[in-house]
Each structure stands twice: as C-alpha cells, then as structure tokens.
Image 1 (cartoon, one colour):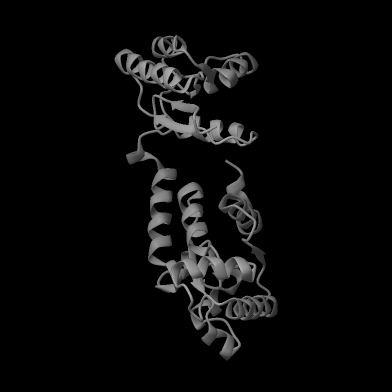
Image 2 (cartoon, rainbow, N blue to C red):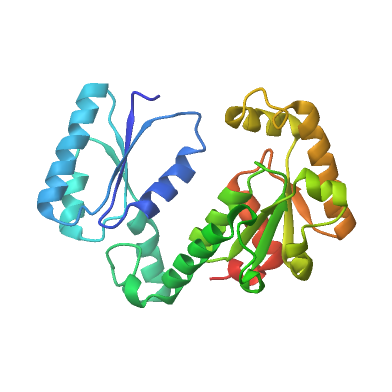
Length: 272
C-alpha cells in the first residue's frame, strides 16, 4: 500500500493529526506514504495543499486519505474540496463536546501555547537537557533531582527511553550502564548508592541484544551471544539482589516502557 498517500494537514505542527492518524492506521496492515503539511493557516496555503493532494491521487490512481486538525473554517472548507477522503480530527470530537459542555470551544490554532511563558514546556526543555547531561553515566551531578535513574546493560534501550520521558512527560531521567566491572565487584556503581530508590531497570533478551550490538561492533566479544547472555544474567541477578524493579524492552515500544515507569515511579504524571 506504499502507492497510496496519507496526508496530515494542520494549521499547527501537525503532531496531533499525525499521532491520531497513525493510531488509527495502525489497525490496518498497510504502509502508505506519509505526508505531513503543517502551518496550513491561510486560504492560499490550503489551495496549494489541495493541488498536491489531488496530484497524488491522479499519480497513484487511488484517492488519498487526509487527517486534519484545521481550526479555521474557511481553510477547512477549501481542504474539504479536495479529491480525497478527509477525516476532521477536531470536529469529530469538539462539536459533540461543545454540546456536552454547553459552551463553544476556543478553536485555538495549533497544539501549543506561548512557549516563552509555558511552564510545562520549560520543564520539558530542562528535562531534555538533564537527560543529555546524564546519559550513559556521564555525570553524577544533581542526581538528587532526578525523577528516575534507568539502569541496565549497554544497548538495552536506556537512552531513547530517557529522552522520551523528558520530551513527552518532562521527567528528569538519568541512565547508567551496568558493565562487567560492576558484576565483578558484585554491587551497583557507587554513584547510584544514594539513589537506589530512584532506580528502574531495563533488561533484554540476549539474542536481541547480540543483534543490536553487532550493528555497532560486528564480530566483537562485546556483541557475541555468549557475552550478551552472561551480561544479561548478571544484570538481572544484581537488580534482583538490590531490589530494583525492571522490565524487558525486547518486545515493548518506548511508549509502553515509559508508561510502565511512570506508573511505578511517578503515577501523578499519568494525570494531566
């Protein structure tokens, strides 16, 4: 189905339209061509994107799919005139909610308010900087301010999970690798001792770990299946001994991992 286009059209960043659209498309065994068109906030831009959508339909011989979050009715009316199947993500939910709340929505364009005065936005930027500074055990500075410290063997998913927690939830997440020297000593890295209650572990199936490591260092001892089995077993034994909760990242998405961590260490962040 890569010969069929799906457009995500928004007067803001397009993130909401794409997130909602992708969630719906995931229910189907298809892989269409994705096209995001953000900041479509004038009549002229709307006409331009309509021409692009119509051209895609003619080229592919199938009408495109369009997910939109346009708030301006004049711009939306133009988009609705395209030769495509259009799904209005906003009006699908906003109009019934206007009836339910007995009030009009503000029809605000875009997802974000003024970033310069948005506390939540600033918290996320601060959390991203924290995650970068404390990636891979680079620094122990200000670890007392961390919301969570992820531990686990190298390449089990700590870094992407830390950044996702920061970007999506404003969580200050550090991550520290468990390495053979730690296993030889038989205890956690010294920098973690004062913060053991903040630790959350990630593990991974050895076969999958070996595949990932071989992409980085093919044919090395570091990537060998035997070494991966040993490291994973020792890491899980250490986390069990230290009373650190953990989960396997092998078959879980970053979103699932992050939600599990939030549920366990910051359930308040699941309430918005």
